[in-house]
Image (cartoon, rainbow, N blue to C red; front, side):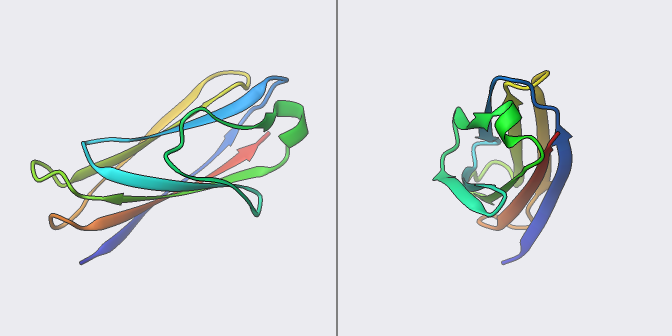
Length: 116
């Protein structure tokens, strides 16, 4: 069983509002995430409308996300993770995709988001 890794590194311009994150596991696969603000764990599991903090309070900090996706969909070996961040100057949405080699393989997605 292989263990691939896909990474994203980006910046997100905050504003005065509450910054929220949604993580969507695509392709009918199964996934779970853990979200950190700097080195502090905020939440693990299914991430929906997760409040990170007010923009000006968390500006200059980094969000780290690790998502593990298991290929449970027998119809495809494609996996995807979509990160949606809102509450800053504009909505951010980015989808990462990868194909596993065999049914049942697991893939790790990493995201590092600098709050600017």
